[in-house]
Image 1 (tube, rainbow, N blue to C red):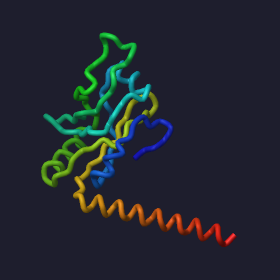
Image 2 (cartoon, helix red, strand yellow):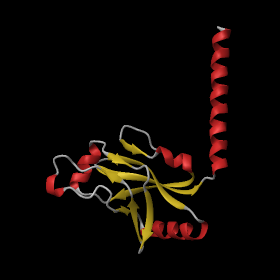
Image 3 (cartoon, rainbow, N blue to C red):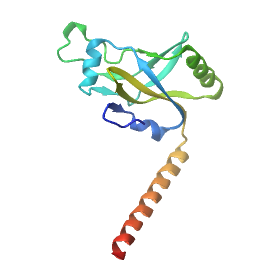
Image 4 (tube, rainbow, N blue to C red):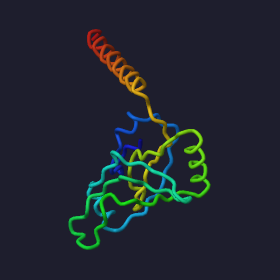
Length: 156
């Protein structure tokens, strides 16, 4: 996940629920009031996903709150938004998604210059025991790190 000064929103739940195979940078088609709302940080990727319909890619359930000064120009917060990607990449993702049971999950939303970009992941869902295994590994790493910090303090 890209975490930097230009990052707008992260989908923290995605790495917990899915094992990420590949990531892609895609553009997103937005209206002016949506961009202004995104600049204010009023976007949520939590339950969003991407899908391919008629050779075009769309993102579903991405919530962008209405811009407060937008009045009649505001769009539906949960509307389906088109993603911008090369046709060959879309075809490749479509075939992988159909044959091997992958899903397309947004990981983050960020600015690249003045454009809003999305980091999209090709992912497979994790089973419950996989999630537990990941949590156990993380806890073990924390314990080791904590023990090494305590040891280094005692040596001084």
